[in-house]
Amino acid sequence: MKIMTLNTHSWLEEEPQEKLKQIAQKICHEQYDVIALQEVNQTMDAKRLTSEQLKNFSQVQEQTPIRSDNFAYCLIQLLAEQGETYYWSWEMSHIGYAIYEEGNALLSKQPLTSQTHLVSETKEKEDYHTRKILVGQTSVKTQCITVASCHFSWWADEKSGFAFEWKELEASLAPLTTPLYLLGDFNNPAEGSGYDLVAKSQLPIRDAYPIAQKKQAEATIEKRIDGWENNKEGLRIDYIYVPQDCFVTSYQRIFDGENGPIVSDHYGVAVTLE
Image 1: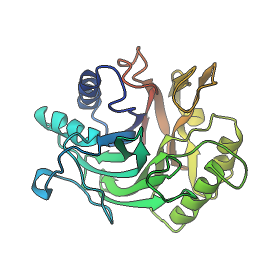
Image 2 (image 1 turned 90 degrees about the vertical axis):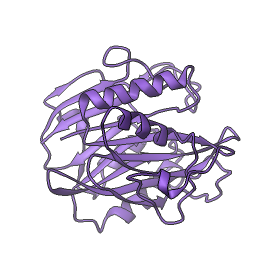
Image 3 (image 1 turned 60 degrees about the vertical axis):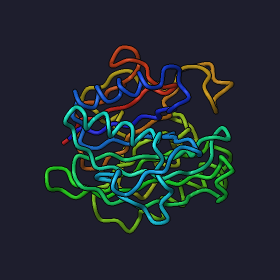
Image 4 (image 1 turned 90 degrees about the horizontal axis):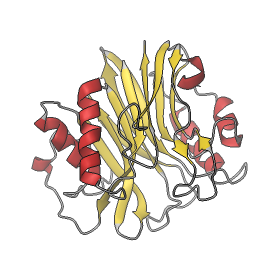
């Protein structure tokens, strides 16, 4: 089983169309079973797509209309041109940079059903603190799994920000009985307070990095980026959490200039597991 996550920084990069093609090429080459994407944007005034145009799309409740420049939709079209079929879902969390509807996406080789969980203290889409986690059910080799594309806020204190959001998601996912995979941008560095909070979770998950049999470079951001303007070092803030009984054969940093071209202000993460 192969899974990957990437904060795409979509449409905010230089030469975004070329980088979109590079992401599609990597997916075609690696044949990931499940993919989680964050900062997946569409402009607010782009043309709305009809249901007939949205092949293999899984709607969530109160679905935000999909527009023609939705980054995930454009990626699905490029994959289809290469003969690759992915089922997918997307939902916005908030408005970004005054012009984008920004959210998370999931892609799966197998049929997908999805829901969103509002986890933030704020609910207004105009507030960039508003966060929705996209959760989907799909299957890999006949096994049903639950996978989430996550984009959390930064650590504030033990009651707000990331801590509040994590506890909300934790409560929502606690009743699940299927194997659980959490992928995405947690906005909290390894060995920090947010990371420690997740490590103490009652959810049956583990960070894939420390348990991988083979692993490559760790940091997923370098120096300053949006939201980390004062950062001066490499940090691992993008994660793949896997079920406790998984055997992780390899952990790779991707889209870092060595293992694939740089396509975002974040590097991606890919894991192969049994």
